[in-house]
Image 1 (tube, rainbow, N blue to C red):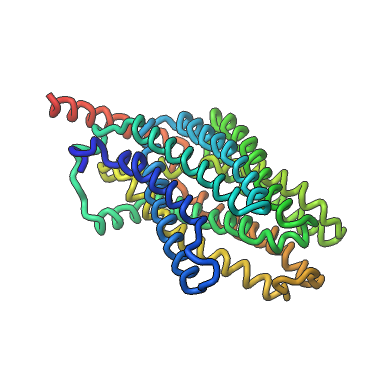
Image 2: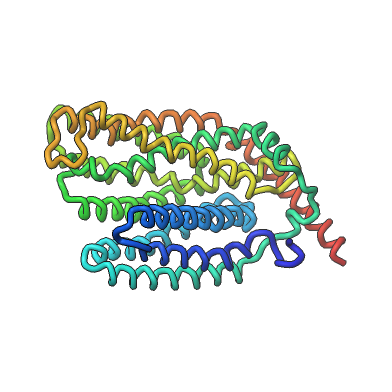
Length: 386
């Protein structure tokens, strides 16, 4: 109820954010330590509650972003700031590893502090951000079924969904199989987790910064294509060099280089923002939430497929769960999962971005039409408000 709550999204961030923080805190207090049924119910309840609030708050936050500005460069800078805040948020994660190993009570207290800080920040964001009702208040409400049909007619939506879905497979593969990568990385689980966090956040931010600067003079789609090709070449080079030399330590060098090259991930949300703009130009309706929600629906499917894919490959090569030593064939499978498999998936993501139409002159024309549509909406909203 926009008239009652003053907007269509910020209410979910203002109150949903603190509730999400509370659910996060409550997850770390098991209802039982011995009864398997109670433990299972607590786990399911926690996951459902946490993931539901994550989707609700995160998708609303994402949907507000394209409302803030139509300028592509400004959107990229906003995302750079967002990743910088993620960098700050990574340090508590590193501390959490150590606290969890030390004491559950200390970890629970730490989780409570994090929950309070995050809940307060979400409330501040929800209370102080401003929506732009002139962009949507006068538009016709379209049934969901019709809206989804119109979205699938958008070439930009289909291409971006393919691109982001395959990207998500690689993200899950890189984070979910650290227990197996240890046999290639040559370090323990805690060290590997900390290194992966440092690598993805610190060097990832450096890569984001470089791509932000490059996007000032070059097209986002072109930068992503070049970055994807670079990542594929780095991964395949790592596979063959390590395979023939046996120097596993080299994998760290390729990981560091690949993370910087992969800084084009900065453009994931700005690309999706362009899809919402394209939809408004084509259909006259502003519906960021519907587009993002449908896009995420397919990403959720690939999130489920990624662990199945990774586990199947490890089993095919003879990986033995829990074993302290793996066979040469199993180690080959681990290296294959770290390098060749992501390259294949990056290739399919590359096909998606090659199909993405919003670049060059077409993008300029679309943006000009968008600005004119918004000018007309502002005039109509102003006249109706008098």
